[in-house]
Length: 527
Image 1: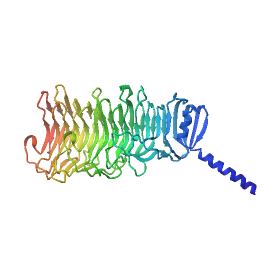
Image 2 (image 1 turned 60 degrees about the vertical axis):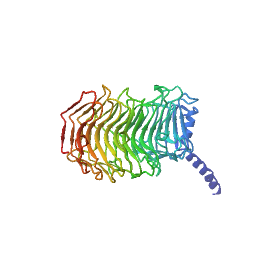
Image 3 (image 1 turned 90 degrees about the vertical axis):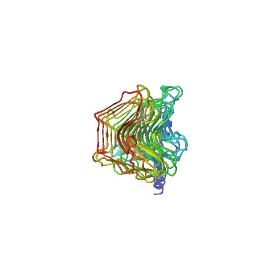
Image 4 (image 1 turned 180 degrees about the horizontal axis):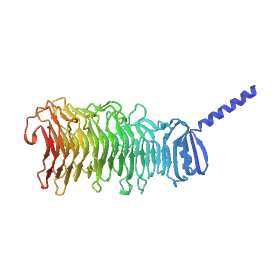
């Protein structure tokens, strides 16, 4: 009996040790065919050392706790030699790769790695969670980083979580597209699809996805990045600028499509800052495609309200400041179910609230292929804005403030209420083109609908004598304004002015130079 007990006592620790090494299972067609590791970092280290080569499969069969960055180097770097790597959860249960990584570092680092797919899908849905639990504003803090020419990688069907809290212009975020290798071609052809991107626990990240690449050459830019079908939520900071997706210098030719952006709780600022859902700020980048995204609500199911309040905050749903070589495009997006309250004010490009905004640079077409919906036409969902400032607040459905020609067509704007709880005025513009008076710069505004029989646009800023509602306004470019409908805009503010200062204007062409004005076949009523 004593002998059997001793045998069991010897076997038990061995079984425990084997179990501790079984969470990450590697199979390969070259090198060592099969091995198991305790962490993803250990598996990546073995691949970097050439232990496993050629076609490699990694199965996550249990939860792992990473204590340092799991960095995967490029094939051909050192002893690493592989043609592709796939990473999936196994065993029919939800798996987690998590760690509180040192500030300024990613949990997973694609360090020049190519042809890697992380697919979290199992028979029960998204079954792989990747989480960096570190709460830090230190530059570089992230959950997954692409750097040094990481190309042709796919992250799909995963829950990606992080709590990096830096501002929008500091490197980092839940997902981070970084710089190229020296003399390299950027982190190109990477795809993030069908993932849930949000906070690690209760600690909200300031950015969901951030891109800041290399600018040494155009080739070094991060290009052909696809962000598609994701749920990007609960990105916020009460004291610093924050964004769902923020793309800055060193990036071009991104596709951002079919994503859902929402906030599951009320977000309250303690210090004045900006909240951007999608912001692209790179005047050297071109051909950004922002299509078929949904911005608003408090859930991915399209229920509840995206609520922002407190302090001197500003909000932009989609904002572009981009290049003029190849047109960027904003098509088929829905922006609705948003409540924005602020103590601040501002006009033109300093407006506190804009749904679609093209800044001082940018060749951008809006809705000409597939119209965007702002608010709703049936009143089922709405957008509300309230300021408590004593100064004027401009609020925009669509505002093009660039120096380039533009086409704004087939967009629908309705079910919007603006107000001021103090004495400041509020001016709402359905569409405003305030571009350049240079000869040859044109604005094409076709077949848009501002207001509806149910989706009424209302201005309740009752404390001001200069509040206004303007359906469509062109300020500088040579316009073609045709086939638009402006209707059912209601103002309760005590504005008794007339002419161009009237309380309600259907279509207003303020351009005085260069001729070439066409305004025809528009329908304006019930103002």
